[in-house]
Length: 607
Image (tube, rainbow, N blue to C red):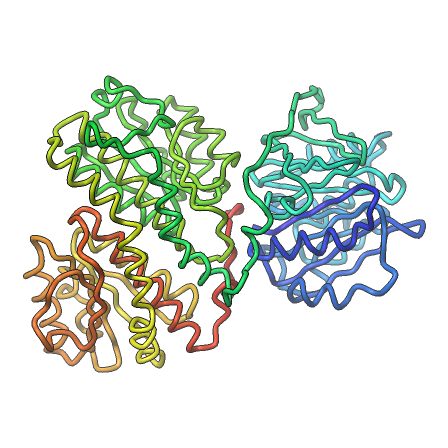
């Protein structure tokens, strides 16, 4: 989850490193630091706080042709100057930056201390700098290889040695590392976000792969003792630097919410088959005969991706009449699941680097499962591991809170359910209605965004609430879960989501005039049931915010947020968008930093 950057080339490394950290700050922002080779040794500057604090702390005159940098999301050791990266060995000759967790760090620290080494931090990462420095290997690459053989866990690392100032060594296992190939310069980062301003040519390292880079080029090999050379050719990325700029928007969450109509349009483009009233998902790599053999669909994700998976599972059952369910990838990987060859497994991830989801994919492949990806980041590890799937084409998402990625995940899964359904039992008439409904989504989402002022007024009205319920029934349930998560993560207001029918089995005891409830009310066959839920809450004195595409009786709810009428199966998508705006404006009313919520980071690449 931390951000790492490295640079070697003809220009001063410091501005490049700071710019890279600025673009990676969504991956962690409790401390930051840089190390550059210059003046006959390493110059290391690090501080608790954000990249802006580091920028102020770098003394005038700090410069070098090579360097490494880090922005941290704490795993071992509290956020502080001493725990900030880069970490160095006792002689300040070797510096490292690390994303991941060394699970045997306690044992390694004890061994080093027994040998007389004084450790300067509380982190797991520092041990690597000492292990590299103590190696007798004749090259930095081999020294890093020997050190990595002693650690257990996950890592994306960059290492530099003051005695080899024109060389950096990077390696990965579980945490992403990307090389950027420039003109007589090389860059390294944990995400292409840090590279796009400087190059469009990148190389994604695989697990257990190591790279040595100089200004003139790179070489890659395996991290094991055999050091087998690997072949890595650069690929072009289709992301431009401007996509990572705020422009006139106050923050990235707001920008990304406003981009949703275009993002959904890109996700749908070329994929709706009007002739056969179906979806055209060539990237899935399954024939109609393959679809017919599927007996179950299992969707895996974490956080918002998991809630999108729940929505997708309902759509698969409703449209294709195939048993389907969603499960947190973090649970799936540890419970020794039965892997069925007739099950289609779907791994969902915005970044394509979510560690728990990646591990689930790898376990499925090892056991012979057929798994496809629903991923936003082209070239990401999950996309490459799956080989087939659906790219979201949502564009870069920088804010920690998922908005356009959640919406496009839901749209992609709706297309998958439609495609499965049309091969099986879904009529051409109903398929045509769904294709039309999907086509209308960009406009309907734009209509929701156009009502932002009304939603903001409702959000500000409840900014003093310390607790909220979000409830929904069947189609509304996954959207309620996602809405509660949005509110929690960016406003720090405690929120819980429940199936509406479960309120009477305990949670109603908490209803009082200080406990608002957001009720999702789609205009479907359960409208009367949802109306009864609102009456139950009102009878106990609880304020109700109804989010609906139906015409409710006047005065039924305390406040009403209206959305355009969508196809019944797609209503959870349009009902989710106002929940984003509600959480956003409530958080802003409380003065929260919506892009960088406390204790969280965007891409979870550690356990």
